[in-house]
Amino acid sequence: MKTRIRALRKERKMSQEELALEVGSTRQTITSIEVGKYTASLTLAYRIAHYFGLTIEEVFDFSDVE
Image (tube, rainbow, N blue to C red; front, side):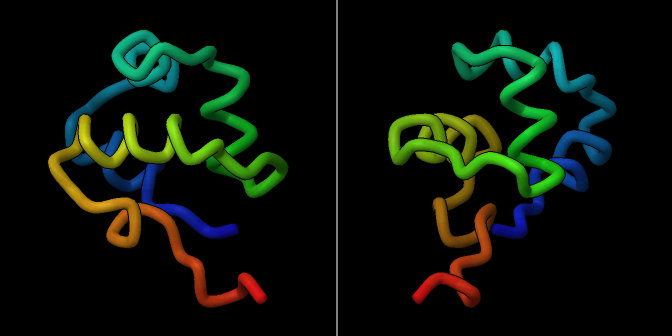
């Protein structure tokens, strides 16, 4: 699944570690989500979107989900 997390982090000059701390996750999880190796749980997706002031759909691309 594609996400805008990397771009959103870069806009705010944040590291993966900083975002992970803000949303209660680990840097490894954020990395895996950004490269498409892991799909965030609904709770984590909400936390990430909420942190950036966006909806889940604005952060995560569901176009390839069947």
